[in-house]
Amino acid sequence: MGDGSSLRGNWNYPTPVRFGVGRIRELPAACRELSIHRPLIVTDRGLLKLPLVEQVRGILSEAGLNAAVYGEVRGNPVGADVDGGVRAFHAEGCDGVVALGGGSALDVGKAVALMVGQERPLWDFEDVGDNDQRVNVDGMVPCVAVPTTSGTGSEVGRSSVIVDERSHRKLIIFHARMLPGKVIADPALSAGLPADLTAWTGIDALSHNLEAYCSPLFHPQADGIAVEGIRLVFEALEAAVADGNDLDARAKMMAASLMGATAFQKGLGAMHSLAHPIGGSLDTHHGLTNAVVMPYVLQLNRSVIEARIARLSAWLGIEGGFDGFFQQVLRLRESVRIPNTLASLGVTEEHVTALAPQVVVDPTAGTNPVPLTEENAAELLRRCIRGDLSGW
Image (cartoon, rainbow, N blue to C red; front, side):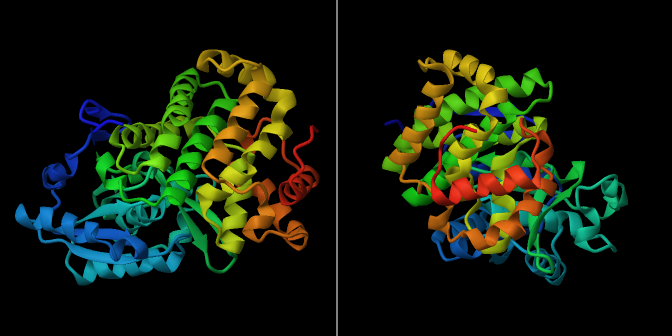
């Protein structure tokens, strides 16, 4: 176990990142660099109940930055969460956003920073076609992202995943300027995360790196990032779950998280194509859902990715090619107590008919190595429900 003191740096990756234990003290400087003088802290309902939010608010106040707080973000955020944040922003006379929390809070914070000066509704900016051209860029305000979990990597992303209450579908809202202007990545902020959430978010980081690596698109830079991200998860996740105060492990997981979100500009795949509609319909935890479906998706894609995974195994020092890597994934899931089936999350055979078409049209489906159809998506769902890891 280490205190994380040697794992520090200032990175431009892909936005300026202050990384390291204790860097939260530099939040006021990051705000001022973006001309934020009256920030709105956007956070989630769970974090709002903990001392951290007031501690962060205090750090800002000591530096003369009087922050307001909006803490109504739910685990799978909906459009109303963004609307509430926009109302709070205007009511409190704010001029920028500090997005504080896990992926949900970061996504909503970025969406609030987008929406405070828009006349169109949020859904007009769904990541379809050239919808991003509809954004009034002058109406956007700066955002500082402060992650407290190591999973989504939303702090270095240009989009937000928000549930449309009308359809119960998770939609991706995108604009290049949604990338936070500054990031404070302080691993100590994740030290209080319970073991189960550490595991669920950590496997989410693995899924981002792994699906990016397996994407059929050509992007060797993303591949290199993803390989190291995968290695860091295999090295650090179990230690982070076992001891929340192991700041070396927490730092490596926080790095792996933002690496995954940088790598998946190359694309994702069926893990996310399943997790998005399941989360939108049944309100399941996104990282946990990805963790459950991961081995089933690997089996679906095996015929296409076997050589790539064998090469990855060699790089990581795992013997046995695809089979060795697959067993490593199963062992890691078991070690951090990931359930084996979607049935354990409440998904039943009755859900398959409605979910399968959503899997195919999810924005992440297009870069799955094996093309997704309603037929193989339905079969994949059934295998995930009943725990069938046989080959395709």
